[in-house]
Amino acid sequence: MDEDKSNNKNLKTMMQKLTPLDSSRLPHAEFGQLMVRFFEDFASSSLDVTVDSDFKKLYNALQLQIPSYNAALDQIRASEESKQIGEFDHTRDLDMKALRDSLKPYRNSRIQSEIAAYASLHMLLSEYKEVEDESYESETNKLNSLVARLQSSDYTSHVATMGIVKFINQLADSNTAFNTLFGQRSYKTSQKVVFDVKELRKSLAADYKKMTTYIATLATVKDDAYYKDVLAIINNGRNYFSTVVLARRTGKKSNVEKP
Image (cartoon, rainbow, N blue to C red; front, top):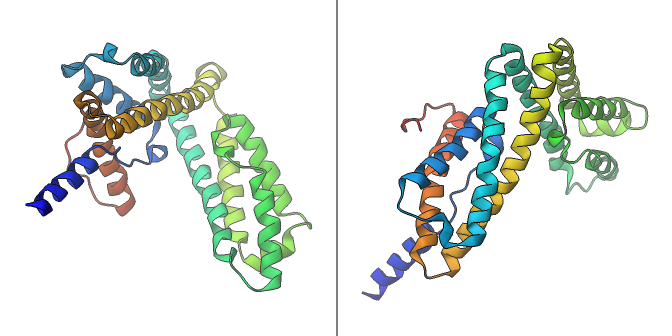
């Protein structure tokens, strides 16, 4: 009997946790749908957002951004060129991550040349922390600078020691490809859109994280069904999109219904 109670307690604790979701892996449209699904699910419930004034502020702040974000998405959908720009940007973001990851095997090296190379390159890359979150033009300029520095005589020996030239070349190629396409864009249809969607998403993601963290915390520490019910609504959408991300990673088709 005690074991059953313990199992039930553990199950309830698990249900009160926020479903893990790497939302950065969601394309812009899917990230927007994650927001839409939360508001639709909440509106379909019998829950009252005014029960908690702090939650209401977070809820409203998030909701106010949706129209602008959706408008930016509509403009992007109307332009195949802009869609390609987003895809090319995502590719160079992945290449930047691959470059950072290529240093990791050398973190605990005991070979002096590798220790020195890791320290030097790690310090250099730290200057470009979160460059993927910059506006498109700012990111392009900073990646151009990074590649140029990595290919200079100051770092060539370290790059050779660590055998990471292919990762630098990949980043150089994908950044050049992005810049070429971006330079061909129509000023009227692309310039404002491509800047807005990235900045809007950054703000939306930050506010979404605040709200979900707040609810998850209170669902754990408060003996109040309200917060647990709100968390269940949040997790409903997160469960779906975490499955989508996992399926995309493994190359398998998701068999869950579309939102």
